[in-house]
Image (cartoon, rainbow, N blue to C red; front, side, top):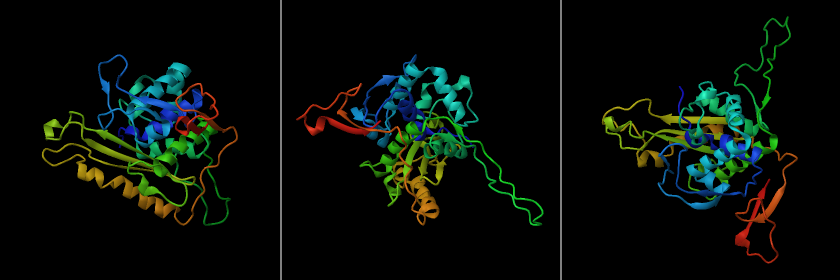
Length: 314
């Protein structure tokens, strides 16, 4: 099944490319503000219906805000070119996407972007694999009972689609989704080893009104959770609307955090006995201290209040 992935793609699409092409640090400041999709009169909204103004990338991703994501991808397009972004998306293995189907709505996992769980896992795994995409596969080794032949070990060629540095910085934002001070359903995944995660939601819009589904309520919920050893993706949702059957996520269902609990159980089964270390920090990553909200980043002035100082990686 192919579904819109919602905000689950923000780290691998918007912010990974910002680190790759815009030279941003993890402490970069973006502005959450009202805006329209380019060439339309459709206003981009956050799930809360409000806007938060200036904020760090950490906050924007931890709270899954939409307008910073769209502005970020647009800046990448302006700097690196539309074709560069399209080529990157095509390299992530999304089988239902063509060059002609891309538009800025992809920044928040909408428009014509649809993926399977397997495709979403493989795309996210590039952040754990140093920027390398590896085609999903199920056969690791073939052995022969007779012993007459040597075992066969298929080789799956990794393809580098992102630099190791950009992958690491984008993964850091996902780590903060779990470890940061946010109420985003991902704190459930906290362990005594690093876990990286991102949620995604898509809504019914007005399509569900004929089934007495309230306008704008959620129909798909995603959670991607990763360690340096495994990447998982969970989807829960409704294939179709049924009249008066509550085929949507009410507030009660959302608070139940169903994809979070499923992800948590999978994570426990896969890695609680292993306690994997985090992905290693690659060469070419530097710590940076600068005046908050500046770009290009301005050096800190002696005696400056700590509230005006930002610390990040670049």
